[in-house]
Length: 405
Ligand code: HGY
Ligand code: MN
Ligand code: MN
Image (tube, rainbow, N blue to C red; front, side, top):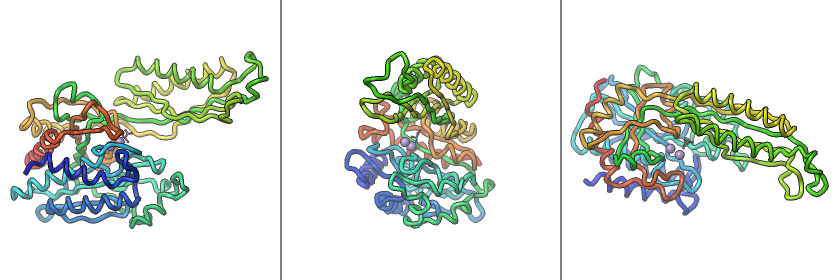
């Protein structure tokens, strides 16, 4: 069987389950999500796995090992961003099913059980939260997120119930860590490193930590035609200085990313001085210390700018996810498996976050990156080749048969 071609065909088929024909738009607990799970169930069945959906909307494929054996977990997310690509998330599920199918076709019996986890929501696009599925398994689920609403005002809890999940039982999904051997996530790199190094696969060393801050500059609005320039308290002018200084300062910190991704103004009309500017500042780094230190730098920066511009300033952390190292033993086994079929196996950190970030609270984690054409992701142009996906399937089949647990 041409496993890479099979992966490409399956990802083309499931990409059709999208709310928008331009790329893939598949949010959690939607008709597109339901249709995608039907396709993934068929992949799991072809791999000789049973399948069931848990209370959090995670579809779980399971291949039983010897009685009393522990379980190794493989997973990623079925959801996408708006008009995203056809590989981010779903590829990890497809490749996991094909690796299990390859072992099943070869009659290989593993000395442990294996589960493939198709998580509902990693992107956090529909609701202002994410990772409910892996957090439920890891026992870190916060039930308060069930009251969060999407842009139409539907709560996460109601959407989950309507989809066939059960909000009341999500907190009961936590797994016994002593039963779990580890977790592997395969994912498109979403960056240019493997292409630059001409490597089909990469070994992830760790996943960057993230924090998100709600930053507000508060000045005074007024008539654009009558308020003299000298007496203005223009919130947008202060914010623009802040955004530029943060960008410039982040360049000086190795491997740190700082992004102002959103800004909203009040009253946001052409003929009024902006009285308030609200923006989000996201900071990512593999070093939590560097990330927190930079966050402090931005607060000092904001206070200075607010005094210079005679406006108010506040910065409140609204989200934080610590950096997560990948397990050394699993990563070594993965590296050996990759080098059985590839000449090189570069090691690299992940700037993007993944379900594995949350799974690290349950068990040792490992991640395998697949080369990403032009480093492009979260766009319809996202692409991974048959040959590279074939190499991933070979590597993971070899990884599973050589796990020394
Ligand atoms: O934001 C991220 O890193 C991921 O793509 N959700
Ligand atoms: Mn993504
Ligand atoms: Mn992803």
